[in-house]
Length: 214
Image 1 (tube, rainbow, N blue to C red):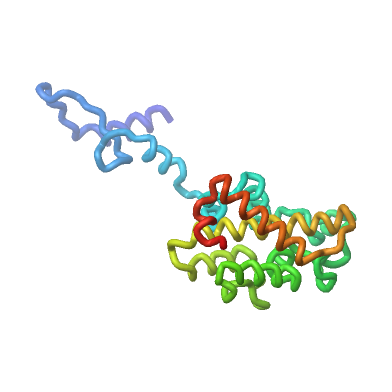
Image 2 (image 1 turned 180 degrees about the vertical axis):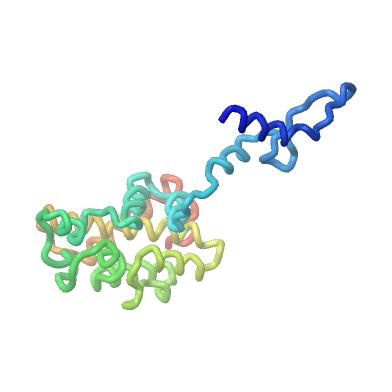
């Protein structure tokens, strides 16, 4: 094995001619300049990585960390909704706690549920974007979100993305109140909660949200 490797190296270097009057120098082949950079090294480490489209929508827009983490779990189907609880033999709601009409999944809860769609419509109406609220044929939350971002003007995208995270967060909180506290779903209450939180987010630094919020 050692001899084999030796001859392989020999074949590679036997045509190399060293020049005594030329100083040695290091060349970093991973960058066009020949100089080392941490970015070029990081890019090489990340070769072959698998991308996840919703990541940029979640992490590059303003929202409290807990909301971003929830959206990350939701887009990866890691929330403890009825379908996931049932797979593990755990107690779970028989049907969606918000509409009591269909089986609960995280995608149903966020965009397919009639209660949720009404909330989206009312909130988007406040910012004159009611035409972009989820429709009956929108079945996957992150697909609807990506399509929404592609359709709205570029200048509004970060504000809209923060608003999407805010509404999704409150739908999840409303669901948990129904499941754990026995509260009935209240459209008026969740709309008011979203309005109040939107004002607080704007004051806390959500400047892009402030440009679209009335």
